[in-house]
Length: 158
Image (tube, rainbow, N blue to C red; front, side, top):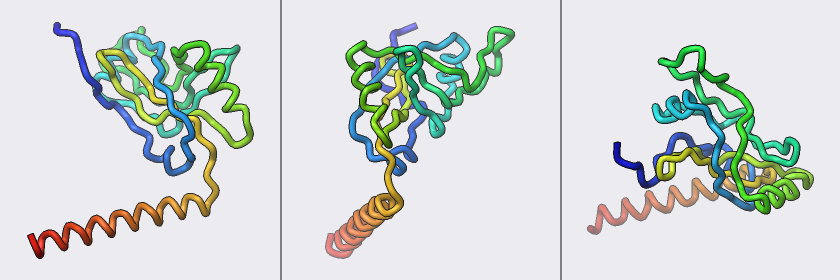
């Protein structure tokens, strides 16, 4: 079989960008079992409830749901188990230090295959207040309205 290349998105977390102000991002590898990889290749995963935690000086991803592989036997994995993240030591220490500040958390933004390997994009998020969420929503609506007006104008005069 030919070696995979490129990036194939499995799951993205749009809610994270709404709930948090993302200050920094990093790409990390995941320690997975065989049935987890097969389940991901079928494109099934949920990262909305996910977050990263510091456990004995390492970062682990929790709350990410990778459903059991349908053809799996007794070797199947637990759907919501703690998964180790693979990052450089300096990156781990930097993210742990920043996440221990008040109001900060590490959230997965997207889960994808990059050149055949499962990767997760992590974001260091600071929780938004209600008025910040409203402001973000208002800005997005304004952009969409402007885009609609532009395309309507182009249709009439184009």
